[in-house]
Image (cartoon, rainbow, N blue to C red; front, side, top):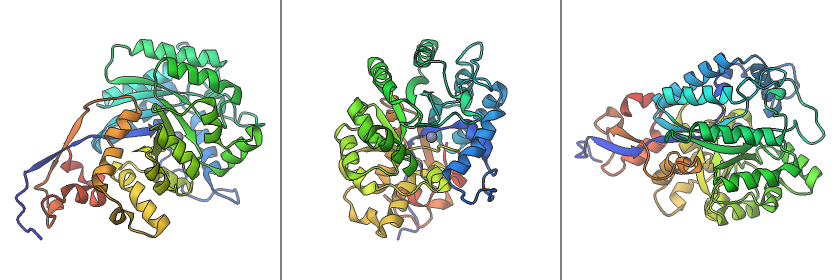
Length: 380
Ligand SMILES: [Zn+2]
């Protein structure tokens, strides 16, 4: 134990990235934590509350909520956000005069909060196999696939000269996109070399429905359509099987986990060991903004796996787990969002009492496994 550390007074680290965010869901904070009238409270009942929120959003409130969410992220050390943006239209589904009105407001909120943003423009065609649109969902659906792709092109053009903005494509999920649309969507993303993000295997029901419709699990279906590449980001991947992890690892694809949201929604625990050993690149996302603390999402990867396997897996692996986790929560997320090369950095004051009794050389381990946003003052 070193009571008088001789360490330099600051540590410089890559700033956090949250590679999967739905900023408007920040307004659900505190609203979904009491039992409702349903006998079962799960992801799908939470989603009904989320749709009620969507129903009342205006362009002004979308921007104000995003601004609050992004300013909070900035205070926690986040400098890059992947915003999976899927509320596009007015209530009832009519496009705004500028079909990208809401996207522009979200981008503006990010830039004014000091963040870089990848606007992952979603494509959402249906409620699900054999299901009709629920109230609120009409705000997600474009008039045609062509209209969706034209909106993406318009966004690319609008931000072509803004280095803090990237545009990516986000076909929502196999549930919400018609099987016949994927080829064109993937061709478009490939031609523009865009980041491609999709929710995959978050819920068993989504997997069952995809099996019923296509005879394949979601990731198997997407692999056959040609989705898997080094630009592909699987969001959640909670219920992926080992052969699916292997396909993603081989292509150097990403899996973006959102531990604080996944545990809030009761999604389940992913098989992180299989993903790690396959070579998948891991990153993290705040997703529903239920907890705004990048430390929690970062170490959630590791400590949730410890709960699942009842092992202290960090001790059983080679390498430096804290360094890998920080990379997942920062540079890997930025890569998943299409920001390559050196990005924003944070400096951490190591003369803070937080580091008392921490040995020289263990500062990163202390930060990753014991730090929190409560240390706002540590990060500049
Ligand atoms: Zn999501």
